[in-house]
Image 1: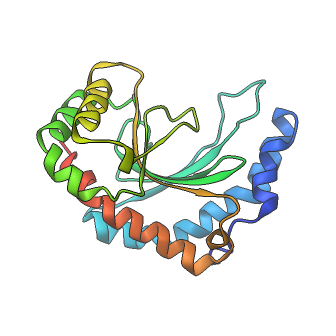
Image 2: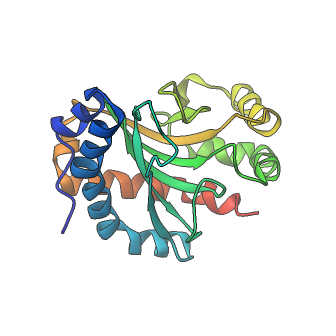
Image 3: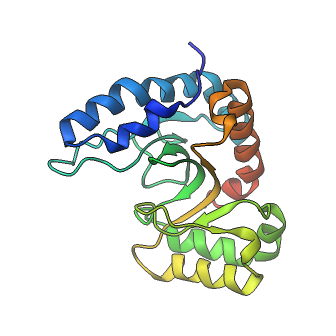
Length: 208
């Protein structure tokens, strides 16, 4: 089955009180759509990345009390997991969809990755469109638009990613839940495809 779009009920999931009730809504409303997106894009991600990619999604198994405030899926070249590897994410908060190239702080070789990015700063600056976002904490909505950063700002953020243990690096797009594209499946899939294609040179650069 092909992706059917994100609709108000998907975002309303994150207003449901209680862990069990919210998780049931995530399983019912959102995770099937992640599977649909994977059906539409997984083979293309393998071609784009020039390596076999695998589909993952957040199961939130460690949660025992607090319901998740977001949920996501990932494409990664590791079959067993994604958090310790560079990967591509698509996910939702209550008010937006995010589409990221993600480097989480759990990555064992993140210092080497950050060093590679810093060494290629001029190239990266040309690869990231001005209307993309950067985030440095995957647990928060906070993000900055790339057009607000200069090269010194970018270098400073990359140095923090390298040196500060719990700093993440996420690059990509955030789309408001009010944007019509989210309810237009073919247009949304194209947006995701184009975003990942734009970010793929950075991803390949960091496969160290």
